[in-house]
Image 1 (cartoon, rainbow over the protein chains, first blue to last red):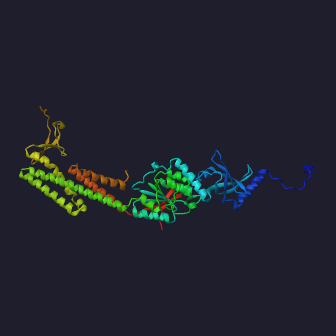
Image 2 (spheres, rainbow over the protein chains, first blue to last red):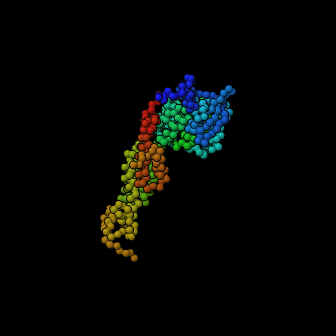
Length: 412
Length: 74
């Protein structure tokens, strides 16, 4: 017998039952496939915020007629820049998803910003108080800017007036510096993370960083009140100059920065010495250098003159006179030609100088004494300095003779 | 290899030479040598200041990490 014939007769046609898991999966696929439910912005009031041990945040977003469960994963929560609190009016962005295990339709929040001026202000104050309490605004933390940065980082939008103004001013004032632009988003939910990445990346390559943005609305500038960005500025490897919005806009990042500039142009001026002023300083140093060597030469001339007056032997006087004339010549050239003449005369000055130094020993020789020197001109003043076999020169008033030491005689 | 002295170091050294001469206690030979060193430092500072070709680059993410490419404003 055919075993099939023994089966019970088919039941009346009923739809195949789904398992609960299948249903949950079906809802999930339907939700995920609907483009209207992805990348959406939702405004509502935050309630029932709970922080999971893993760092995720669970909360409910509600208005007068409905509510939806929300989850904010840890990595997004860290980038939020402020703490979600019950009662806050926020705009969140994210995707709707279904979690089969709970059977819940939830909003997976990727970013959030406080909605409305009041909420902005409250969040701003909270972050400001928190960082102030940690000492991040302390004057003692502020680093001074390098006087002569070799490389200057600029974190801002790569298009627009801000980067143009900064680069133009740096080119005019301090063309020796290498400018590295680190492009970043400067508004919107992605801006804090983008700015942080750009800041951290460029900081390894430069001596100072300008963090800048042009003027904008409170919402536009909001990313510069971001807590994680403020912390990145505080821990930046090199000093940071902030220039955000107009002078009247003060963001959290401005409080944390080492220097706050009123405008991006002012920031460019703050980080760069003026090449024209530097040239003046260098030229001033050169003029003083020439003045000082001139004084040194003059005082040497005085010495020569003084010696000349004390010497009676005619020959020595002549030699002193000759040296005095040469010095006078150099002096005149310095006085007449200014700095550029100096280089031309420096070899001559060197020769004169070496002669001058011989002058005072010459006075001794004239009285009949001789001076023993080593071959390098170093004067030997004690017998104990000499060993048998040493080569020495003995200087008389009319010349040098070379001698070899034959034996040491102990002196009484 | 020691890196080239920076502008800052050269200018500081130049100003130190001036101060050394100003103290007036150097023997003449030494003073002339200091003067000559000062002139060389001056020339170096002057050359750095005369180099007006500014480098501007942009930091970009590439497959091998961050690189810099030329950046032109306007």
